[in-house]
Image (tube, rainbow, N blue to C red; front, side):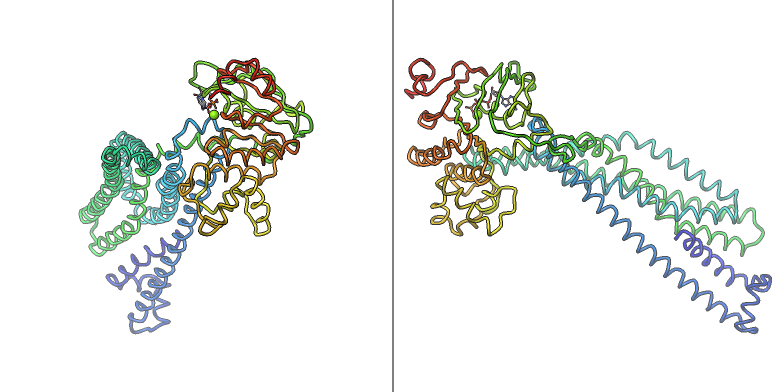
Length: 565
Ligand SMILES: Nc1ncnc2c1ncn2[C@@H]1O[C@H](COP(=O)(O)OP(=O)(O)OP(=O)(O)O)[C@@H](O)[C@H]1O
Ligand SMILES: [Mg+2]
């Protein structure tokens, strides 16, 4: 490629020389022989041949340039794909604790926007600069071959000017790059707030506030975007000016020092063509260096995010876990970051397999946190959680989770069909329809899906299930948990949105599961927990009493208050 570049430049140079100085043919033996071979009396056929060869060389050169361009673009687009997939993988493997400290709109921006910023503004320039520099190296070599001193002078001047220019802009480039990143982040968060809370925004009449908030952040973004785009072109404009200046200097130099006017024209045309050929390289280096500086803040911000956390999902570390006897909590403490007190304080209990236990307590007592510990979402600061005597850890947590059916306090529904929402995260095949329907029947939602939903199990429920009522969402959540046929079923306020009658139907269905699976229930309504084998009362992260329903009704004041309410 780079040799072709030289031939391209050299050919035009020699062609012009041949036309302007025909005596060259006479003095060069090889050329003369070729010319005589073609036509001893006329130089025109020879010149036409040279012209055709020159055209072919240019054609091949540009064809190769096209292929190189394709290879470069393909490399960058592929890298970008790999980059964003790796980032999503890293995010899904990070601890939940890390995740709750992030803003999801910001993470979305990083996966969609920032990876592209890096691919386009760092990776592409590096590839492009390298390719074009290699091509230029050969041209520079040719220039050296023609006139060493002159070439050194021109190159040194260009280099010094470029370095000065870059040093001058450096600080501003960094500032604009990081400001642009921050502005982008605010913009994404603002959009997420508007779409996430549109109902509340409408009800509280705060459309204007959010509209203004967005337009402010979008305006800041625009300001830095404009500066970034202009700045990225400055070096190339400056370099181009310098290159033209250098060319003019060459012509003046030749006029003063050279006696041969035809020589001046050919040297000048060589430099002009070399300059013309090198302009894309100069532009690419100038724009590239600036664009890399501008995008560095994006790369820095992703550096930590990209670190893969090896843990439960690492296939090389997977361990099995057996659950034949019991779950044990042994003096477990849990403290959240930035919280003054422990959310769970010295909790100990055990849950025999296939028994049913309930945790009751006031709001904020730590019930959901206890479940999160059991799910391995968080790990205790001190104390142990054991399954059949084996402590829960990152290596066996996947095996443990695969046995669990979990209905959280807030159910997350996909903007997908009811079927896919129940099968969640697995590809529901036609053959699994029966299993899906059975789960839905247990959760008392099959009737509704078949009779009320427009397309039955193929009805799309809307983002986060916006087209469903709270109780319908909960029942789909319960069906989702039961579909996996778990050995442990955890219900965190899973029936809180249901009316007493529907809840009774589900409770009955769940009661029928007793002895078939281990049930862990958190509920405010005591009717839900009446039949449990054990009930633990949780107050400010501590278990203050445990017993069967009748025992607690007799002796525990808190429980009595619950019972009366
Ligand atoms: N990720 C977190 N970071 C910091 N504090 C947290 C976090 N999650 C929960 N907490 C705090 O821990 C305490 C226990 O919360 P938890 O959700 O376990 O209560 P709960 O008993 O489930 O309450 P509710 O009945 O309202 O659901 C609360 O004071 C809460 O503010
Ligand atoms: Mg809770």
